[in-house]
Image (tube, rainbow, N blue to C red; front, top):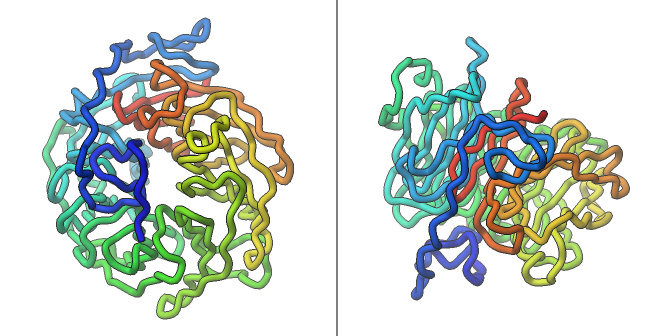
Amino acid sequence: MRKFFPMSACILVASCGGASTVSPTPPPPPPPVAVFGTGPADCVGGLADGYACNGITLEKNITLATFGAGYGNDIWGWTDPDTGIEYALMGLNNATAFVRIDNPKVPVLIGKLPTQTIASTWRDIKVYKNYAFITADVSGPHGMQIFDLTRLRTNNTNVTFTADALYSNFENAHNIAIDETSGYAYIVGTNTCGGGLHIVDISDPLNPVFQSCHAADGDTHDAQCVSYIGPDPDYAGSEICFDSNEDSIAIVDVSDKAAPASIASQVYPDLGFTHQAWLDDTQKFLVVNDEFDERNFRVRTSTIVFDVSDLDAPTYLYTHKGTTNSIDHNLYIVDNKMYQANYSSGLRILDFTDLATDTLTETAFFDTYPENNETGFDGAWSVYPFFTSGTIIVSDTRRGLFILAPQ
């Protein structure tokens, strides 16, 4: 069953889990955000065009007004394998925007793919074989849009695109995970599969084929699904999903698509809403963010670390406390760096030596929401830190796309 929560990032509906139940008393629109510069600007004396920063340059900010949108949400990236050109794929309430960023100080809005139905606070994007797979958590038959990213090679700007294909075996979805090694997509928080894993073969991207459901663990908010190379010999060569199930972390063996099997489920102290999780490069540790612990338990930004070297018995290790009170929303790990999108305190970069003990240290940040660092739901929604150039892109709910670079 979906959980219902107080006003948060869930501006339009009542459930952070992705339900389509309309709130009977929607909150008033938020006040306009203050206007700051859009760059380029170096971080000098702790500021870049008015934004608080440490060790990160503002290459450029593309505002929601430029996108013709009212709200920003998820983000992902794509690098053209033929040209090496990097693109930001920015989720908006009414569309997905495609921005060329090979010159990050002079980004180019190539175009937008409008929403399949109506506007949505939640849109999610992942990439496989040069195709973007896009879901939205909205009432009505949105399904999964599939877009050929090689179409972005055009020199045109501000094009209104149409989808190349549409997968319609579900209506709404809160998130999508893709295992790029296996060629399977795992869509979660849909109106099917009990809100759990809706498994689709996307090896032929324009002809996706439904495989099965995994509903045994209840509603899933987000997931990371991998072809397993971690230390547990019992699952060598398997395909494993690490699910953020709102009230727990669940581990699922999805190797046999006809019979996906629950492996383990685990909780942790001060559990509010298990939002998203990501493995380190060794797949030995799973790092979790909880969207409600800061507000419910009055704690500083909390990063929760599990040892998952034994998949049958994941072990809670510790909770790292950050430097602000802001709510953490999405995080990703590259080498020994953790990139966190922490709503009101923006992008936070934490270095670590060994996740077995709390060695996490904040080494850089860029605050996309300078108004405050409190427990609100405006600010940095997500971050994509995987470009080989080192460019980092951040989506902000109120200020659009930030293109950043470590100094």
